[in-house]
Figure 1 (cartoon, rainbow, N blue to C red):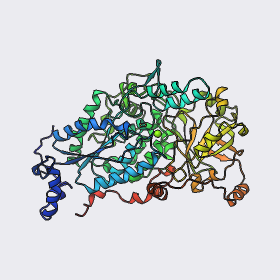
Figure 2 (tube, helix red, strand yellow; figure 1 turned 180 degrees about the vertical axis):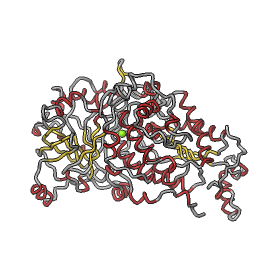
Figure 3 (cartoon, rainbow, N blue to C red; figure 1 turned 30 degrees about the vertical axis):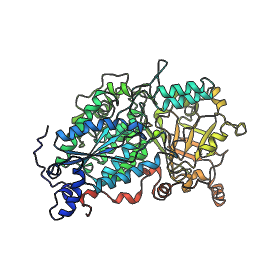
Figure 4 (cartoon, rainbow, N blue to C red; figure 1 turned 45 degrees about the horizontal axis):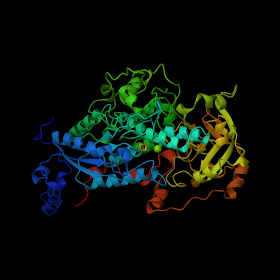
Length: 594
Ligand code: FES
Ligand code: MG
């Protein structure tokens, strides 16, 4: 425990509010309202660090609701280390319930949190994370303001079980909807399987976007070692909350800021981790966005150069079999990072929030459950990272190779002499309503030689970019045993999906990308060896179609933010960031005026 009377060497920014003799009028105004809930002026004027707790939990964000409880332990840790806690809400985000998509909220939470951290007397902050976008948004904001910041994950739910079978968040939905289409289960059974996958407080228990992004925060060096994977109801979760509160006070005293931690090497570590855990395809825009806000040059190609050739080591749904509890018991994120470090594929000398290097944090963290976390030289799959594709349809699209099933590989990627190459007839849908309306239309004549394409689902088109690319085949195909068709789209897909899809295609059709001129019946050629995806349509024909202006209509904005979001947000390949915001970095170095 730190001595409470210890004075920090630097003058903290909060003192400009509470200990400002030149502007006693303002200082009095600032002090009186905090005092009216019992805090004393002596405390606020003592020079003790004021630590924000960015509270992301609420009834409307159930995945993060555990933080309402955890904040008490965070406060204890802050107090015991000599700081003063100040808890405040951030814009809530709930991935599954937010219409038209929670993707609108990442940049909105970011904007709001920047204003809170910049405009109030906060010296350091605990970022409470969980549901998918609650992690990147808060890290983006902490980078912009650049005050000491630490991530406290809420942790996944307990493992879900249904009739003796592990059922993981999201993954069970995608698998069950195929069973429903095949007539194997009833609607009631469908609902039972879904509710059984969610047995407790916490975020998604599969390696979906939530588990991936919390693991990424730890790999970046922004949370205490082992924090990400502890299930929400476990007693260790409260202990991490307490220690996180203690540690942020020390970080303020050490002036250890996001800019000291978020280097290019840290981001390359995060990319490597996403590959070996079979992480969500949504990690790509989020990591790209966090790097952009940290001022780190990260190219879309870095995903392929530093991640694609890595093996799949973590046996967790959707790419593997198990769920979060076993992952945690097997050693969690440190054990996965340990494998990378031993293989020489992790930058071990990077700084982290613990005050030690990443390599020091990982000392002794080898897994002893080799069914759950495989050795680097005995993986579940070789070359299991993301492939970055390009061609005449788009400049950027990614394919998560760890979810390509053997069945899919045999059907599409293993033809003698043409390994890794397939051609398919495009069936083009304008958004998900169109897909649901027409997917079972016999006149489309969809068979195993088709690729399902969805457009109008990107940043501008949706708006926000929706998780709709994981389209399932027509019911008739599923009934005859075809679980997957190749899919392609300018939207995203759930991190819990096991669908082999070409995703996040940029530029999107609504921004004039190649999908806007693609037509049903065109042949698409995908070459994974060359990392290309092209429609076999000649340039003359493309020019003719473009002249006819075939761009599909997009819905009007329904709210002011939708309109502003569309105007300011870039494409997914670049992380979907608001370019104008990138020039604001280190805003805490300049105090806001009274
Ligand atoms: Fe919130 Fe998955 S829906 S964590
Ligand atoms: Mg999601």
